[in-house]
Amino acid sequence: MLPEDRSDLLYHLYSGGGVEIDGPSILVRKKVGSSLSFVGNYYVDMISSASIDVVTTASPYDEERKQWSLGMDYLRGNTTMSMSYTSSVESDFDAKTYSFGISQDMFGDMTTLSLTYAYGDDLVGRSDDPTFERDAKRQLYGIGLTQILTRNLITTLNIETITDEGYLNNPYRTVRYADPNNAIGYSYEPELYPNTRTTNAIGMRARYYLPYRAALQAEYRFFTDTWDITSHTAALSYVHPWRDWVFEIKYRWHDQTGAHFFEDLFARSEATNFRGRDKELSPLTSQTVKFFASYEFMSNGWNFLEKGTVNFSADLLSIDYDEFRDLRGSEPVGEEPLYHLDANIIQIFVSFWY
Amino acid sequence: MKKYGFCKALLIVSLLAGISGCSGIEPWVKPYERDRFADSIMFLDPDPVSSSYLQHVYDAREGARGGEGSAGGGCGCN
Image 1: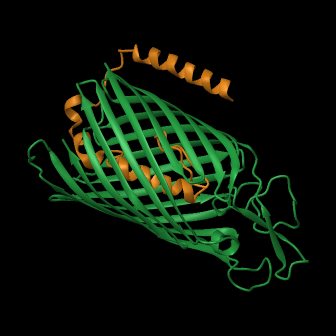
Image 2: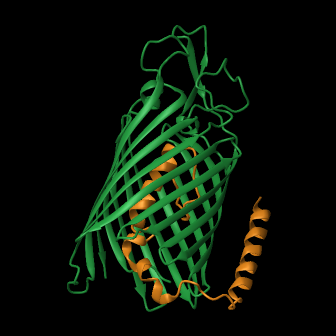
Image 3: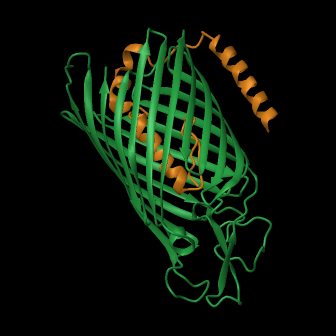
């Protein structure tokens, strides 16, 4: 089945940990005839960063990332074929992604099986060195199964393998190592990651229609990779419509182990073959509480429009790091407090169906 | 890995083609019993523009990725 004709105009804001990122995302989807649907998306991140990494090892910076994508879906019988192209551009990072998919409705449309392949081609640069250029390639293999189980329950299962090859670390980020020759007790050197990574994820989602008009959704994902990160992510949400409104509340929990080459403080310079101090690759636990409200207007249509919604979403994200330390104080080396991040993620968007 | 991935995809496509030929399985939830799945509160991804943004945020803040059922894009999240 082809997706609905729809346009969204979204404003997003991420604020927390000294980082502020905001910008628009505009998505337009339109059928042409009965078997073709086109989609376009334009997305901007305007970044103002004085994150914990930046304030302890570098200078605050402003950056802009622009991303656009074009895609097409073609329906033939019970089969939908999709392809898309995405381009993301920053002053020091270019990413291109080509994606292909096929999905098949089966067993009286109770089951949908889908396959996805995507190829990503990244070019990593440095803003302070125009001669610095490194490549990274990414391939994604995905299989998904969506199944109606009862008249009140729908489930989906997704398995994805992603392989990366090339320059995978951040050219600016450093690791710290104990250095008795430095008055503060430690020094910094560039991080060095392996140049390959394979990740595997299996995600499940079930949505249940309650005995009254409301829905409950449960999600779980297991993740593992060749850098020794293992994670569990679970979420539970409740959706409640009231007149022209829909309200949702959601709780999400994520727990991960760290990459084998992560250390907050290495024993000495070049202590290991690979080394990183990226807090996203460290052991951590994150929790998010989401509040969402949507108001439907023009329910009876107007001109060529079928209906519209105006939507507000707030996700309150809280991350506890198990090993990554906050170096802003003056505690003895290795005894600094563990870092904690709180961030607010706000989305305001309007949607139109036609 | 590339060769393995291609073979895996080929095998899955073959299975897909084979399964779709099996018309003997009767749907146990009849089309007229699926009215609740047409209600937007039962959509698995009711607002793709919003969910893809949030997925991008989590990809940048956590070490895990994938398993969400969408191809994703060039992230540039480092």
